[in-house]
Image 1 (cartoon, rainbow, N blue to C red):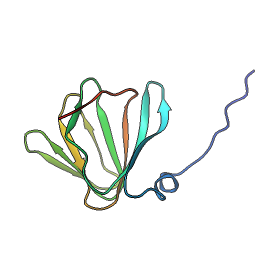
Image 2 (cartoon, helix red, strand yellow):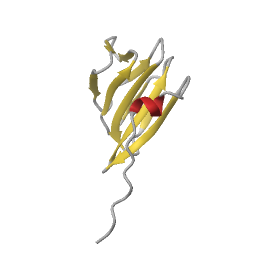
Image 3 (cartoon, rainbow, N blue to C red):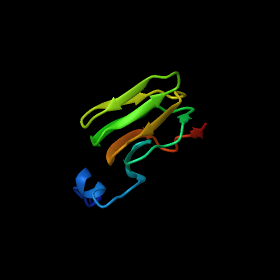
Length: 112
């Protein structure tokens, strides 16, 4: 029988607290998907993903997601939204914002 890997318990706050002003990285891989953590206080470029949906989950602050066509979503802590593949979008924050993104590993980002 093989021994289980060492399990390490962490909190999103302890991982994100030392980060300032920007970072976006993979926290964990789950099957063929990953959970990313992003800390931001400005805006990210317009882009889309050709073959993967993207789920945003806000932990801290307020995340604005602008969509092609003029619609804007504003997410507060505890709120989430799925952005479908091929949907052109841009994220931004006016103050420190921490969010999780759940997406397929190797997602294909196309910048506009």
